[in-house]
Amino acid sequence: MAFPYRKILCPIDFDDNSLGALDKAIEIALHFGATVALVHAVPLVVQFGDVPIPVDLYEDREKAARVKLAEIAAQKLAGVEHESIVYTGDVAASILQAVDKFNPDLLVMATHGRTGLARLFLGSVAEGVVRKASCPVLTVHGASPQEQSKKS
Image 1 (cartoon, rainbow, N blue to C red):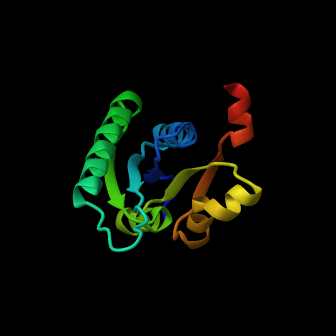
Image 2 (cartoon, one colour; image 1 turned 45 degrees about the horizontal axis):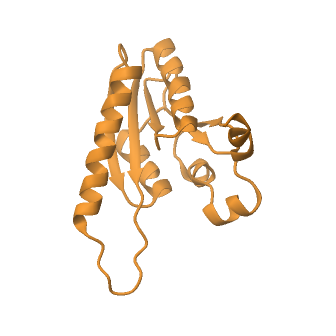
């Protein structure tokens, strides 16, 4: 890990919280002249019984994710060296795989602010990544679901 930061990894799930984290990653990247690697994980669909999941489903979702990442990069990353990658699988494991591949100096990711039963059932990707990442992790707290519903 280097300081000043030269490589920043930023997981994106296309919600407002992750885009807010990307804004922080861009701010840091511009300050240090760092490269930003965007990563998106297409989660696996749970399969019930013997019904196979069509491979096309994942290919279409990966393709759509690449298009969205390219749009975000065009809108937000002008003047910042960047790259994008899409994984399919467990979200936390995919982010950690990206950490191993890119060896970033800093990982900047959003937290969703879930509490109680929502956190218990949905888990915390950010918490899992923070516990296992081999680099420093900056978590950017987004609005809680209750705060988001008040804005609507």
